[in-house]
Length: 207
Image: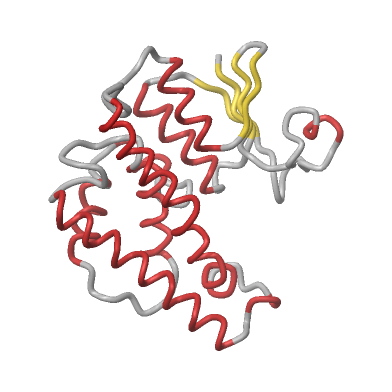
């Protein structure tokens, strides 16, 4: 039985939970992180020196970093249409997974901390406006990509890239700001809502 350490509300933990749902991998999840078991203890640091969730334990194998975990889960399952072995198809999927981690995540950080977490250290109006602008620019990039494919991030079929991207889209719609009109993103969000894994784990950890 796969062991998942991390609270269900964490966006990175939800990547793992959603992937398990798509691959029909049974798991047991334990609440670790803010508000639950602390991640700065010797017990947890022995599993992940970065003190971050999620962490998985698969027998005697321990792994952290959510994108590494979801790729491992596909390999563990013997491959999947979510992550084809063709080098070019896989590279296109990896491109969008990496973009989500390096560009999209970074752009929504300030606005999310300000508007959702209500962090006192993130209430500068100019910095907030800049954060919203950068986030909106990245969502416009995503909208153009979805207009091009007409379906999912990397092409006609749902892929591993849609799990991190889809969770970020959920965060976009759930953050109280003025959203520009992005019809392809809205249609994409509707498509994701038809998937059981997204309904279970994609919407802030609640069905």
